[in-house]
Structure formats: C-alpha cells, structure tokens
Length: 338
Image 1 (cartoon, rainbow, N blue to C red):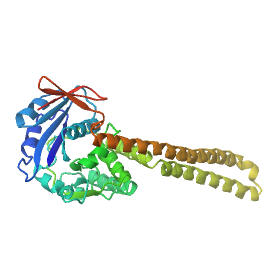
Image 2: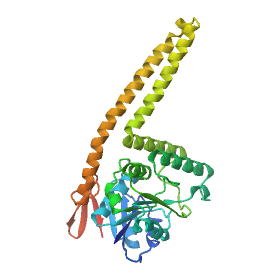
Image 3: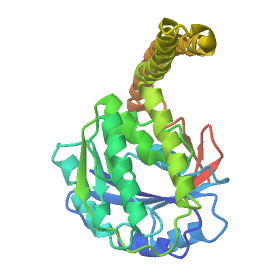
Image 4: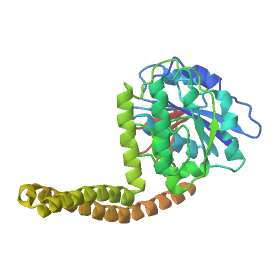
C-alpha cells in the first residue's frame, strides 16, 4: 500500500529538514514516500527538501496560497498512485511519530478522512483568546457541516484514496474548513485522533493577526455553507428579513388602532421593502438549489473520471522530459523532481 506524506511549503528552509527527518520511514505493509510542494518559495525550501530526503519535490512558479498548494499536492499524490495521503505542515507543528496513529482508522476501515485533534483547550502555548476562538469555531463548523470535530482547523490529516478523489478545493486561504463541509455533504466518514503538537518555531504566516484570521475563517465558513446548503442559506436570510418586515407591519397596525397610524407610514414602507427582499432571497435559494444539482452531477462525473485516470486530481497531468516530470494543469507550470 502506497502512503504519501505531503508537505505544502512557503519559505520553510529553517524547519523543513526537521519535519522530513521526523517522518517514520519503516511502517509495516506501507511504502512511504514524502512529497514537498514548494509554493513559490524565495529561499532554499526546494533544495533543503531534496537534501533532507524528500522523494518528490513539486515546485510551483508562483505563490497560490495554502489551499492551492494543498490541492496541487493531492493531485500529484493521486497521479503517483497514493492509497493514503497524509498532509502535514512545513513549520514542524505536528510530530511525525503521530502518523501511524493518524492513518490507523483508515487502515481499519473506520474512516476515509482522519483529522488530528490538538486538544486546543489544553495546549499550553495557545493564548486564551486563541483557545476560545478555536473551540467556538470548531463547534460552529461541526454544527453547520454535520461533522463532529473538536479541532476543525488542524492541518494534520489523512485521506484515503477514495476521499482524496472526491475533494474539490475552491478557497485560496485554507483548505481545512472547506474540506470538512465537503466531507459532510458527501457523507464521507470522518474520524479524529488526539495528537500533541510541537511548540511553534515561528509565528504563523497564514494570517497577520487574530482579527484577520477570524474574518477570513468566517468568510470561508459562510461561503462553504452557502455552496453546499444554498436552499437553507437563502431561506434563513429570507425568513429573517420577512420576520423583521412583519414586525414593522404589526407596529404600524398597533399605532393605527391607537389612532396614530398616519405618523408611522414609514414602518409600512420599510416593511414592504424587507418583505420583498425576503421573498426574493427565498426564490434565490430555490434557484441556487436547482443549480447545485448540476454541480453535484459534475462532481460525480469528475470523481469517476479521476478513478479511471482521465482527469488526475484537479486537472493536473504529468509528462516526462529528460528524466524529470513536468506537471501541467490549470495553474502555473511546475516541475516534479524525484
């Protein structure tokens, strides 16, 4: 069975070698390969990866973001015949020794996706605001996606080949939240495994401050929920607007009965606007739900094409040139060196 450990990287020359060295190579019954995705680094990330023993190095010519690098790496792993794909970070946040425990639910047939649980409420190097935000955010994601998780943003994950074939990532910010909604929508079995993260060796580069992270994460959650639950999303919006509009009508009627209706005509006008917008939102929800049927059909077609080898990953195909693999897709040209 082929196990690939992929590491999306951007300027990680200082920590990448330690990450690769910590990955256990001798796992019974598994042929483990390490693939590094260099997302347009300006330092020696690619060279360090080769020197540290990475089996494959994908070099993207421009920086597309963590989500794009993750999706590109998944596509290449599938093309190279991966049966299980583990994703870890290049900043040495996660321990390589936890990989056997992470893939165990997949090997046992209990899950198709396994997500590490850092037990954020007890991580000593997490600040109190970060712990609170992580716990609350995970609960919100679990409720909306119908996937019970304690650490929704953990990037230490394992995917079976079947789960990887069904993944589609649209965000450029982070894949962690979007793929959870997709798993819930596709009813892919998800498990969680407690892990102990390493102490951070550098500040996060995914966001500049907590406010920016909350803003981007909230936008990702709203977008993902609207993508997979369009009818509910617009019905919720329409119901709220219609409810406020009806309150305005009741307010006008109350004052009208009291003999002061002429002074509250503005309530009727505002309520009329809100009711109209609310009904339009509900109609948009119905239309979006009908459109989503086509999207689901296209996802199924893409999945079957990937299984047959017609469309590896997200449209990436590789050809050999002079002993190297040159991978081409909808994004930038990259080299895949072994």
